[in-house]
Length: 241
View 1: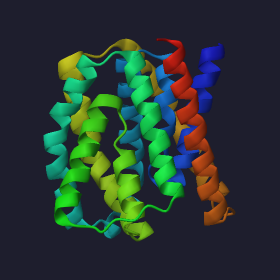
View 2: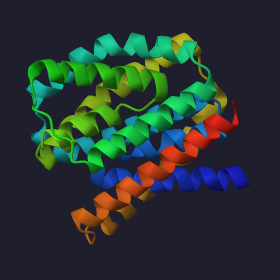
View 3: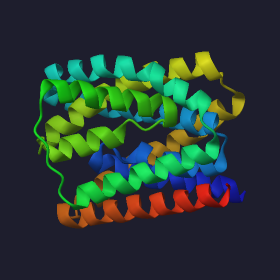
C-alpha cells in the first residue's frame, strides 16, 4: 500500500510539472520510479505515460511546431537510439542512478547560471542524438532539449510544441526498441494503465495552478525539485555500492 501511494504521488507531481514546462514528467518521474521498479519497468512505464501525455497535448499546440528544427532533432535521434539501448543493456542499476543524478545536478547548475548557446544546424543534430541516447538508456530525452532551448532563448510556444512533436517520435521508437531488446511484462502495462487517470488529473491541476504562479517563482520551484531529485538519487546510488 505504501509503494502504491508513493507511485501515485510521483505520477501526480510529475504530471503537474509537465503542464507548464513540457519537460517535467520524465525528469521528475524516472529517478523515483527507479526506486519502486526494476530499471526496465521504470523506464518503460515512463515512456508509455510520456507518450500518452504528448498525444493528449500536441493537438492544441500543433500550429507552433518548428518542422525544420523537428526534422533535425529526429535525424539526430535516429543515431542516438541504438547507442542508448546498448548503454542500458551494459550498465548496472547503481551506475545508472549515479549517472542520472550527476546529469540532473549539472543540468540544474547550468540553468541557474543562465547558460547561453547559439543555435546551429549541427547543434540541433547533436541535441537530437543526445536525446535519443537518453531516451532508450534512461527514458529521459528532456535534459539536452531543456538546456539547449533555454540557452538559445527559444520562444516558449515554439519550444513546447516542437518538443512534444519530437517526443511523439522518440518515445514511440524507444518503446519499440526497449521491447525488442529487453522485453516487457505485465507489471509495466498494468502500472501504466492505472496511472493514466492520475496523469490527466495532474495535467488538469497543473493548468489551474500555474496560471497563478509567476514565471520566476515557477523557475525556482523547478530548480529545487531538480536539485532534490538529483541529490536523493545520488545518495541512493552511493549507498547501494
